[in-house]
Length: 143
Image (cartoon, rainbow, N blue to C red; front, top):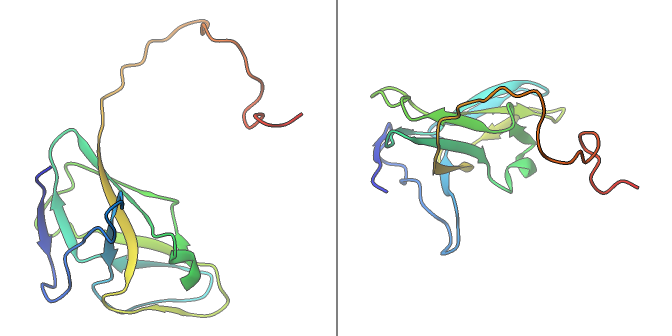
């Protein structure tokens, strides 16, 4: 897939896959960012993308991000294909779950990104569904 990328600081590395089998590219912080204890902060990720129409971006924490004392403030980030202006830098909103300030260094890998295709949904309203009831939400595996 061909994706146009703009870096806001060209001295930092481009996003890249960190292993042969990696599904996502790692993103790094453009600036040193301090996040106060028990609060939300926004880490600039140094990129704006122009992805093809019909695709979307999933922005998530790296598997080691929790070791910093941070977790994504909104679980995951979903970025639509039409968020692609020249100044539409991606940010990683994080929650500091510790009792102390956390500092993310400039260039530190903090998030990961994958691009996926989607299809628009057309809902059909019905009175009943054909499937068999399985039980209440979250019931799988309970006896």
